[in-house]
Image (cartoon, rainbow, N blue to C red):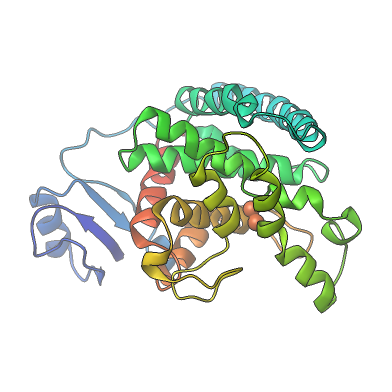
Length: 301
Ligand SMILES: [Fe+2]
Ligand SMILES: [Fe+2]
């Protein structure tokens, strides 16, 4: 069993990655005051859980109830995707629009996420071909809001993170479908056009009244990576804000766990494991929070 992280005040364990060699090691962890223990299931046995202070979570939900809940989640998602598609097309054609037209949508999204925690994860698996970008945007918005909440961001900040996620790929709406939805390999020139979506979105969003700087920052920089290998500005480390780091992790997690024409969807565990292994590029604190959120969902589903 590969222990990715133990969060506790005991310095013997805190922030260490190690292979759990014996039952004695496991007993030592449970005897500590650990808040959270994350086991990297891709590296070993599939056992994950929380520390001794946590109550065991119920896992006896009936299949019928779970199915009904999934259908409810699916219907809310498809309604929201249709609503987002309408709102974004109105936003595109009306240069005087105020970004606050999206505020009720961000609130709905964060409220729905609190009522049904499954939404953030189910969103990633429920895209139809036509609504791909819209559902991706909702999924990233919901995950960013949840991660922000888990990191202690206040209610207004959580809503703004949700909105930043909803708008992060706005620039893709400005790219012709012949390139965006092209089947098969892209030419270097077409790849260049797709890679321009952060700047396209940023310049368009900047023309709207009152657009918060944080949302512009997320739109322009959500493909930047901590080691400087991202785009468009090749920012590194401290040059990348916390909100952008949250967006990068959530964006990549959604991409990895989605089915694409050229690949199968990765499982949550595979995607988290890959993000943990690439800590030079993705903020480990954010990945840990995302892992805690997905773990809570997995154990309560
Ligand atoms: Fe993007
Ligand atoms: Fe994206």
